[in-house]
Image (cartoon, rainbow, N blue to C red; front, side, top):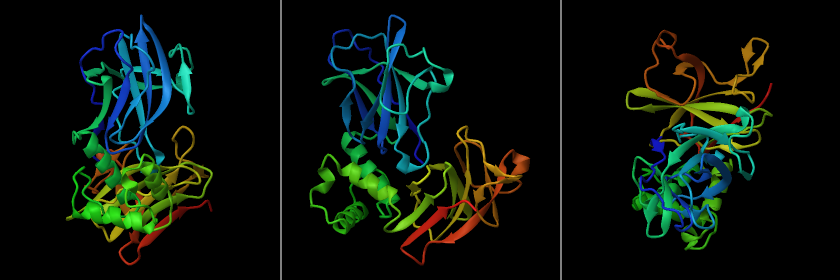
Length: 326
């Protein structure tokens, strides 16, 4: 995936400026939490959903702070988590919407890493930007976000570059026609909801993992690129949910491996055997996020070896791999 980070403006916001906004210039729908430090006291609040290309106000009233902090997470339909957190400080959050007046006064297990940010002073007021290496502007981020979800939903809108082209126009037109939407649907405020629903559904074209177990499942994908087989992971598939991984190019065959994990991200075992779904093709993986193209001597290089299943997706418009407990 394209590398992501928090691109943070370095101009300090002066007291009594207008309300603080978060601007999403990535190709991912995100939920964000903000931390506000004033006189050594940090408060946190969230979650604020911010669509690609959107700016959203997160502080109502004049901004009087010494420092701002941000923690962002992507929508689960994307499967993996490409946003690295710089880890400047750990503050309190909850899974549901929350507000903490003392963001250090909770158990460590309830804290996550936030990135420090000095808001940029724009013409609209102080803003913090979430950005990718591609350095999209607002319009490009929205289009790249549409492209990414179209690809996950099984429509060929590659490359994901935020630029309008024939493939993107064709994929978008087909998506709108397939769902009997109006011609201006792509400009509607709720269009990312429509795309997320399509990405989360096993119906339609493309490849999907679906988790029919009661455990979270971490899955990894292998794709032949040139003369190499590239494995990428991990994609999290929540119980009862489906995830469509981003298939680069137009692969005809892919490799799939997955294993169930507990609440601490440890592999679940049945006796001495990990609860997993794969096959007989040995390929390398490793803990944490990875992308590997060399699959020789995995153990000697400090990597793990897993048995992947070979899946032919070139002969049918839709392929779904379901994870079920034996």
